[in-house]
Image 1: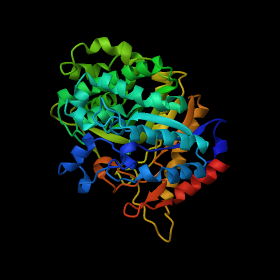
Image 2: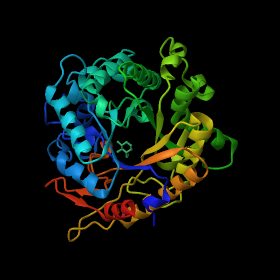
Image 3: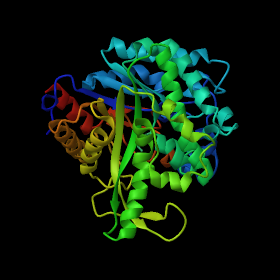
Image 4: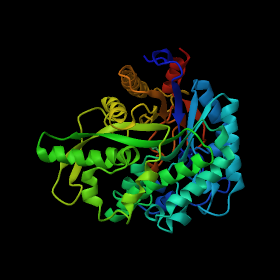
Length: 439
Ligand code: IFM
C-alpha cells in the first residue's frame, strides 16, 4: 500500500474537480453555457442530464472543503466557470460569481489547503458559442479578458493557475468527434479550434503575467497509443493518433511548431497566419499538468483522415470501458520530461477511475479504485526515481459528479454523492488515501 512517506518531502497531494461538473450552474446568476445547449439536444447526453444542480457545491462548498482537509490533501484543484463570472462571456460581470470564488479560495486557505485554479474547464458561455466559440479567433482575447477579471479578484491567493483544461477535448473531441459541446463534427472547425485554443492559452498567459500572476501552467490530457498489430499501417495509424492527441499541443507549447503529420493533414483548415502565432502559443509556463487515464488500441482503416479506429483491448476496464494501464502514466511522465519540458516541474493533475459504486450500510467498498490508485502512484514513484521532476498528484475526482456526455452515471469520486439527497459519503478509497497521507 502507498503512503505519503514514499514520496519526496514537499510532494503535493490533492483532489481535482471542475465547476460545471459540481457547482450547480442554475444557482448564483451564472449564464447559459454551450453544455446546457448540448445537453438539451436529444441524443447528446445520457437522459439529457445537465449541470443545473450537479452536486450543488455552490451551497455545499464548506462541507466539500472540509472533506478535502479531513482527507489530508495539501491542495485542491478547482475550476472557475467563465459563464458564472461573465454570464454573456464578455461585458457585465456577475458579482455573485466573483464573490463565490472569493469565498471558496478563502475557505481553502482557512483550512490550510493550497488553491490550484483552472480558468477554463469547458463551460463556454452560450453567447460566445453563438459567435462561433472556439472557431472564432477573437476567443483568445475574450478568454484573456475573462481571466484578468477573475484573477484581479482571486489571483493573489492562488497557489498555481492552469489556463485551459485538456486542450484536445476542447478542440478535437468537441469539434471533430462531436462527443462534447458544441457537438460539431467538422475537420475545418476542429483545426481552427485546435489552433485557437493554443492561442487563447498563450494570450491569457501573457495577459496574466503582465498583471504579476505567477505559477501559470498548461494542462494536457494524454492517452497511450498502442498499434493493434505490427503492420506498417497500424503503426502509422497509432503514430497519427499519438500526434493529434498527445504531441500536437505539447509541440506547440514547447517547440513552437506542430507535428508534421498533423500539418500535412490540416494545413488547409488552420486559420490564416497560424504560423505567426507560435511566439504567443509558446509563452513560457512554470509547470505542466499531466492528465492520464488509459490507452487506446489503434487499428488502421480505409477512408479519410485520420484513417483509424479504436478496438477493444484485453486489459481490465473501468466503468468507462477504459483499460487500466498505469505503464502509460510512466511513459508520458518520461516523455514530457525528456522530449518537451526538461527541468520544468510536472504535476499529475488528473488520474482516477469510474466505478459503479453503491452505498451499502453507509459505506462504499471501492477496492478496485484503491488498487487503481496504488498502481498509478507506483508509476509516479518510478518516474521520480528516474529523475522526472514530478512534484504532485491530484486524484480525479474529489466526488462523483456530472461526467459530461455520460451524465451522472459514471462515478469517479473518492466521495459518493447521492444525486437525489446530495448526501456525501466518503468511499473506502477516500479512507485509504486519508490513512496513506497521514503515514
Ligand atoms: O470528468 C473528466 C474531466 O472533466 C476532465 N478529464 C477527464 C475526466 C474523466 O472523464
